[in-house]
Amino acid sequence: MFNLLTQPLIAAAPLGPLSLPGLLAALSRDEVDSLPALRPHQAPAWHMFLVQLGALAMHRSGRTELPREEGDWCDLLRGLTPDFADDAPWRLVVEDWTKPAFLQPPVPKAVKLENTVPTPDAMDLLITAKNHDLKQAVAQAAAPEDWIFALVSLQTGEGYGGRSNYGIARMNGGSSSRPMVTLAPLAGDKSMTPRSGAWFRRNVRTLLETRHAELQRHAQFAYPATGGLGLIWIAPWPDDAQLHLRELDIWFIEICRRVRICADCEGISAVKGLSKSTRIDAKAFNGALGDPFAPIHRTENKGLTLGDGDFDYSRLTTLLLSGDWELPILARPASFERTGDTMAVVCMALARGNSRTDGFKSRILPLDGRKAQSLGARRQALFELAQAQIEDIDKFDKALGYALAMVAAGGDRDKIKKEHYRHAAGARAAFDRTVDSEFFDHLWARDAAQQQSAEALKAEQTAFHQALLKNAEAAFEAAVAAVPCASLFRPRAEARARSAFAGRLRHEFPGLFAKAPAEDANHVA
Image 1 (cartoon, rainbow, N blue to C red):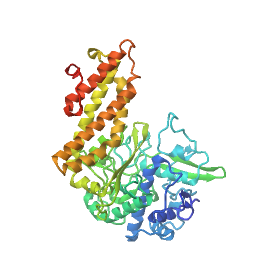
Image 2 (cartoon, one colour):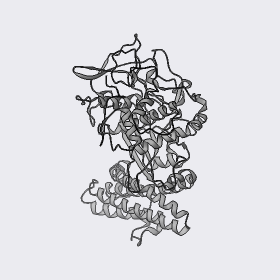
Image 3 (cartoon, one colour):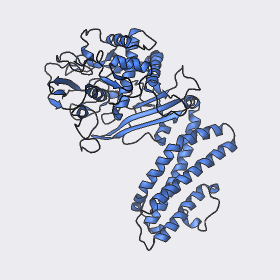
Image 4 (cartoon, helix red, strand yellow):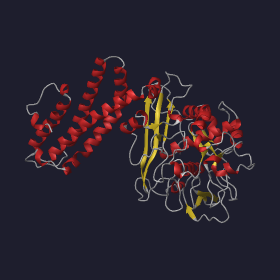
């Protein structure tokens, strides 16, 4: 029931419902604009699933050119499951639980699946225990594609969910998440979002081209060159057994939970159960398994954990430029990409903590071809420039925080305490968000200027400082009226705060201000 290979279960705009092979063919032709039913947090898991699936199918068949026809893709996918003439591994519902179903492993007779899951959003990996931003179990009229997307999200991205609910292998600990960091082609200079088809083609082609080198680079895991298990859900899962990396293909698509989808006259639902251990014996490797999408820390040899952070300018500087992180193969320029190609760095992950979800984080950083290539050739120079910018931002941020804290202290610098700085938190966050949107444009301009002359570099530095001043002043003015201060002291407090703000910055950046305020050194801390 609900055969992904033959039934049009996945709605794609503008083409309408497609089968899984039909979707892969449409992506190969770059005819898909969007998948309307795909929720934002499911997008990275779905892209990674399709890329790994496409690469596995093509490698197994020996093909190097992506097919453009649905029938060809159907044959390739069936080639991954030759022992199942009934297409059981590709069916959403298989009544015989001794057989696999789509992303659902066979269930041993001794194992009971006793927890009912009424809706796909209740099965998904988002933790919504407080029933706030995203309500629980609201998808009462869910279509098969909603279950398909939720299965991919759960089985390829879930973490530790309590006793006997284990997470995936490609994750640095149960409270982490699986990040996706990759380059993607953009349609032109004005495009900010990758075309899903062009992105899919690029990543599959890159995997096929680099497979031999990646197997050698990750030789410690003994992934077999051919014949490794790629679709984990087709293998039996005895309750006391784990899979080992030496049995798996380097691009394996994993599962982490025992779950089965059911259908009756009332609709589709699911049941899930527990396991005695993780499906794959890989805990010791901290997610550093050769994942083509995940950055790995060079010295600590562990996968990226986003935590409650974001892909802001500071984190991207560390990931892309510091040299502390080894970028995954799909985040590096491919041999077939030209200097003139317009690219983007795409970073996505679900920020997670201990029994909580801190939001879906996404960042698309456009790059021209020269910048994409320079992430390798000029990484150290770019990192030094970025660090200089971060240090400048920190100076403006501290000046802003000090000035607003002074307002809260009534203009008396000697009475400023830690709690007064709390009134500056909103303004400092707004300043940081504005800076974040401009950071890399200034970095690319500063890098170009550095390669021209010292005068050009100085001009770009001044332009960056002027932009920081403008943004910091705007954040101050937007926040100052809301900072609590006795009305009797407010005129004095605001005057002294503005003077202190300018004084601190004039001390750090002497050439930034045309005139020096009357009050100067008294307000420099």
